Structure formats: structure tokens, C-alpha cells
Image (cartoon, rainbow, N blue to C red; front, side):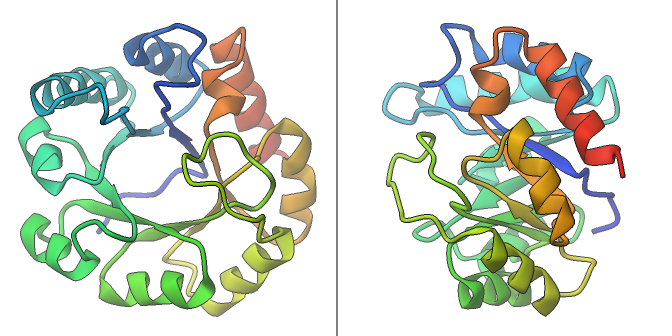
Length: 213
């Protein structure tokens, strides 16, 4: 995988979008500087045909600024939509098989909740992992106890720098400075952008916070 992974990663959430559709959120987030989006539809409502159609639309939006689109769970949708990759987790197609299906040119992310799980995913061919939940969050349909920021810092020390570890879960503007101070360099967010009154401005502030010293 030779594409550079941005330091800010937006994960969409149909349940936490302030009544706005995912395309509107993507357009505004891109205006604010977001360059990687994971399309995570509510699979209770969004069927395969709509999933594919919306993924294709989101790919056009983010491709206009040279950004990356990943789709949730579905390597087949990633290929058919022209997305840049897929994000997997426990219970999905194993990373090794997804890599064989997608080939070396697509990005594979993985949702990890334990350090051994994260390292195993990278060993199977994942390009990056999200490690969560760092802080209490309302964006997880299967709530878990927070792992704490130090757990993210410890995992970062265990993996090579070519495989980013994204802090996920309750990450917002107020948490970034602390996370940066302990060595976290990559940040995944949901409601900090999707529920913001001004999506573009919220995204812009996050990008600025992450980029500043």
C-alpha cells in the first residue's frame, strides 16, 4: 500500500448526523479539510443497492480533493464502488482473506479493542488500526469500557510507524492536545464532526489542532 494515510479519519454514522444525509456531511467535512472517510451505513436500513450507490457518490466527493474513501465491512462494495479500501472488525471477513481478495492496491483498516488483536490484524495485512474506545462514547452500538489513552500510547510503541494507530472513541477537540502529548499522531472521529452544527468549521478546527505543534 503506497497511499499516505491522513492523520484525521472521519467515520460516518447515520444515527448521529443531525438529520443530514451522508453526502452533505461528506461535502462539508471535505471543505473543512477531511481527507479520509469511512462510510459506515446503518445496515438495518441501507440495503446493498443503496450502499453501493452511496459509496460511489462519496467516492466522487472525496476524490475531487485527492482524498480516500473506505467502506465498512464489505470488500465487494469497495471494489464495485471504486473505493480506496475497506474497514473490518471482529466477525467480518478476516483481514488475510480480504487482502487476498482486494490485492495490494487497496487500504485495509481494522477495528481493534485489544493490543494483541491490533497486532494480529497488522500481521495479516491491515494497513492501519483504530483502537477503541479510548474515552466514553455514544457512537458505538456495542458499548465497551474505555481503554484509556495510555493504552493507545503503549500500542503505538509496539507497532512500526508504517502502520498508523488511530485513537477512536470520544475523541474530540478537547482531547487531542492530551493525546498528542503522549505520542498519538492519528485520530478517528464520529460525532465531533457528524453532529456539529457547522461541519466544515468543526473539521477545520480538528485539522488545525492535529497539525499544530
